[in-house]
Amino acid sequence: MSLLGLISAKFTFIFYLIGTTLLCAFLNGSYRFYEYYYDNPPVKTSYEYIIVGTGTAGSIIAAGIPSRDVLVVEAGSMRTSLMDVPLFQPLLQGTQYDWQYQTEPQRNACRALEGQRSNWPMGKVFGGTHMLNNMIHFDMMGNTDFSGWFETPELTRKFLDYFHRWGRDPTIPVERLQYGTEFGEDFFCEKMEELYSRLFAKPNVTARNGMRRTASHYYWEQRRPGHELLLNAHVLKINVENGKAIGLVLEKSNRTYEIRASKGIILSAGTVGSPKILLHSGIGPQKHLKAVRIPLVQNLPVGENLQDHITTGMDLLLWPEKLPLRPLDLISPLNLWNFFNGKNSSLLLPGCEGLGGMLLPDLPRGLILGLGFMVMPAGIASDGGAHLHKLINLREKVYTQYFQRILEQNLQSVSILPVLLQPKSRGHIRLRDANPHSPPLIDPNYLQHPEDLDNLVLGINIVKEYLEEMNSKKAELNPLPFPGCRKFTFDTKPYWECYVQSLTLTMYHPVGTCRMGPKRSKKAVVSNRDLAVHGVSGLYVVDGSAIPKLPTGNPNSAIAALAHYFLKVKFNVDLLGR
Image 1: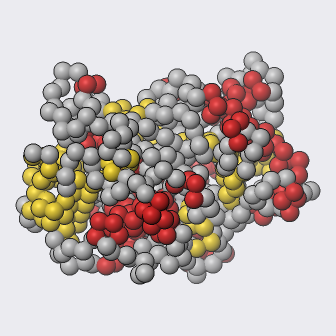
Image 2 (image 1 turned 30 degrees about the vertical axis):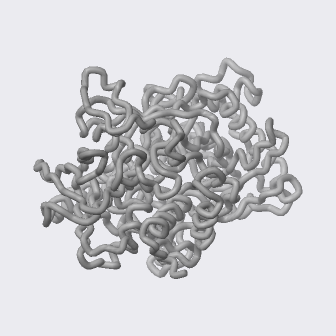
């Protein structure tokens, strides 16, 4: 344990502790300020359309819906421009702008996390979770990713037309990531072309001049006449009469309002929010509420089919040189000058600087693109223990025995995260009780299927193969044994199985809880033609919850294309100008 390492670790901790404390205080303060500033009640008691949620899908639909009588409801507060700085992304989690959801204890995973629970940050803000994510726009998915999603091949082609028209979408601009480190550049070496059929590359990001850009930015700038944006308004339930959605009940500033919708209600509240609202409205199974009696509208499988991309491997690699992401590097005059002049600044790094997807023909059943990889020039130890390990709910003992030792030895840890793109495990979301303000029960059932564990272990082995193919400044495998796995010989299959089951991390990509499909299907909640809720007219769900199966990449681009598809099918509106 070196003296230099101890001094460096202490300085890093103090720097990030002060910085995160000040920034989080500012963010929480701004949330409260906007709560006060936008304390207006609904102007009217009836609208043509009500859109619930202002995430990627909700904002795109609001921007294109052909009506001047629209109420847009958002449970969170107005965003602040500080949230547009990409490097601040982790600091947004755990603030008032985050729903701060947490899963139920996982039986087969998350053993290194407190209570074996995974934190699930989701945006409680104008702009939704897109305001909190890594801004990655992934458009490398093949057409087979979407097979079976829609009622006919013609509708699938219509969706794909929007999915593949990126670069011409005014709602979310996409550009190449501007900033990269020596680690990322060194990792993208030519030798890897000989190993695998897909090479790593810098990702595209949803940004303008390096700064975060979401569909909510676009919608806000439209200033559409006749549209009312109601912030800090919590939708309690949908009102249904004779099989038709006629309005909703919302709460704002401790007052309850009943608002009618003459033409339709569009739920875009997300994979957790949309099924929660439906269940509280009596749409879906209520048996788990036991004594609570809510009349059923339709016994739909609301909240089932929950899927999420998961990963592992934080700080698993050591890099021989310090990267320019240390405290003094971030606040150096040159770095700040570059940032304010829109140049190559580390403040423009959203966390991930490289993506890869592997063709794995040797896997059972010929799995294609079963694994993705994220290149990150940092890890859990990067902030000296001030904030990051708390965001993933890591046990303090695990941080002290593993991640803190990296700092104390003055080592530079980096991460190449294997990502399980096609998990076999399925979970669910259910109501905790009849109180609409209670957080739901979230159980993703991580690693329930044995193939999921096998494939993530395979991903670690592929990362190890990469290390042998890198050039002279190659990274090394972190030799520290992981807490809880020391009874297994290091770098054996049992050890890596234990490691994956311990450090099981979400990629923040949950989908599927209101999956689309034909009406005759017992697994479908919404129509695979126009996303209408089966059995309830005038009610639609358009967000990640409608996706029946995880795509092999970041789903934000697919969710955006789904919103464009809905506008075309429902209203014959094409925001992409074709």
